[in-house]
Length: 263
Image (cartoon, rainbow, N blue to C red; front, side, top):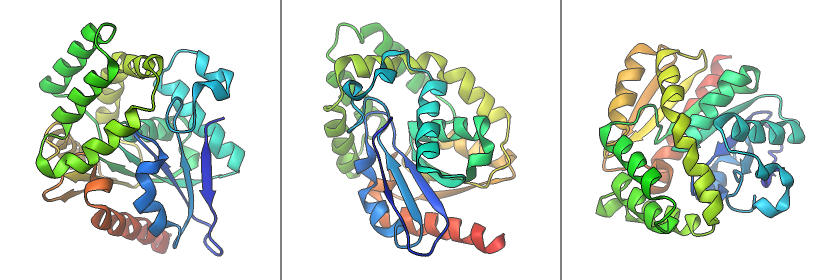
């Protein structure tokens, strides 16, 4: 079972589940948890191999990592906590896992908030992945991760979120990093499917105006997906919840609250 923690609200019946990205952990949500637990029940978790979900705590981490396998981990936590339905908030690769979960178990999903969402890898990001696959066995994984972090979050105002993810990634084992990196082999067909098929769940994309790798594809998708809206935060990069937590919290809480009032 993945490491997880809950914050139960005295009166609210609404659950919000936070899913971090690759190389991160549930600690990246500390500025969100503080605000969200005032309004909702909150579930945070560490994906397999990350944070306090270390491989040594269970045999389930021995099998190969796929998006379906990692999504199943999340579903098991929801079942364990007895959450029948939740709003989901994810960042970066966490957005892919949430979208996959909504395909597999739509009855669990009330809405999706996808920050720094990934729906397409452009030429630069695909080249980055190919180079990573070539050198992953001979180059120390932290050098690769630092390179990826710098390319995705290159500007001076991205430094805080860049360092946060690098420091979290240092807690990964080399073998865990390689298992997660292998997920890139199945990412393109999955993202192509997500772009082509709209899921009928209220979806808010929150993107940084400086998220140069991923924002253009989100803009195109939102034009065709009727249940989706996009909010772009100016002077902000990929990790929107870390760089602009106040704006992220306000927009996300307003979005979830508005859905509740329309029910």
